[in-house]
Image 1 (cartoon, rainbow, N blue to C red):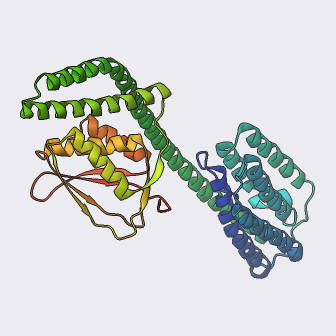
Image 2 (cartoon, rainbow, N blue to C red):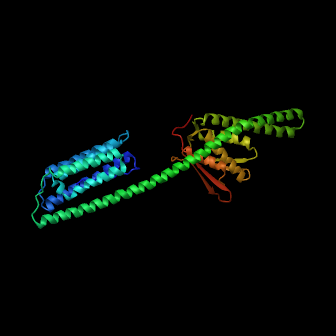
Image 3 (cartoon, rainbow, N blue to C red):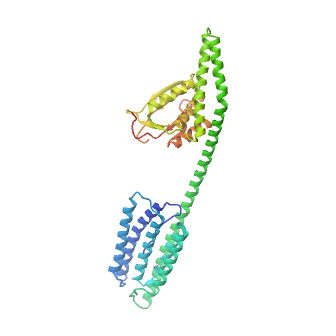
Length: 392
């Protein structure tokens, strides 16, 4: 007999073929065991060379399947359906040499029908059903009769075969249906995660559109502020304290205009600029210098814990903005006292700022964790994937 393939509606075709490969290994072992028990244990005369040849062909097919799974090109539904038909053909030939439709294991044709109906498109499922009916019908007329002891012994063997076939069919159907139900639950969970991600992305897009609009509106008052500050500096040249304060104000206005220009560009293009590989120390130092212009009152302590050489990462505007959001949150929460520790290895309050930062960092393949800190305050752990080369 042949044990059909386990397939699931939500498992990729390559995964279904991989399941077929594994289950066919068990099928080959079960067929050899059944042939040995029938021929040597029950003394049933079987054309053993022919039936062993069929099992050998299945073994060769499984070897070819193993080699095929190592190839890079994708597995198609038609390819999987063809392999399922090969299992059905092997079952048909084994039944032909062992009594045909009178063999109690003939009902195993139902299993590939169930699998095809629950995992493959309707056309393939109907094709499997029609071919199974044709094969079953032919086996009622074309088969090699079994040579069994007459009378009650023959009937008892038939009942024993039906009993064993029922057990095998029941166990396999229960296993397949259970796996399918589990796969459906996993699919529903995946769909829920996709819907959540889409909703979050829609919120980000809405915020981006709002930011681009606000950037256009704020450009005029910022230009006015810069002009007024410049005129005040010109009008009061002998007041150094006022002049210094006005220069700080002008620097802040310049930073704001730079940020608004970037927001406008991203809003109009619909995407951020592509990132490039840069050393972590260069990237972080430039980012902190920009942040210090925005928050000159913040005292920052930076500690480098990683070993040389310093690796690189892919940095772009959205990642920079995410780290700036985290730094601003840290400064607001810690009274302008911020500590930054930088480390790397081979593995590579939830306000809107932290929300945006977490979304951007996750999009880069990283993660953000908000933890408690010994001695008070908060500890935000940011993990980012390293680039596979060291920028020069």
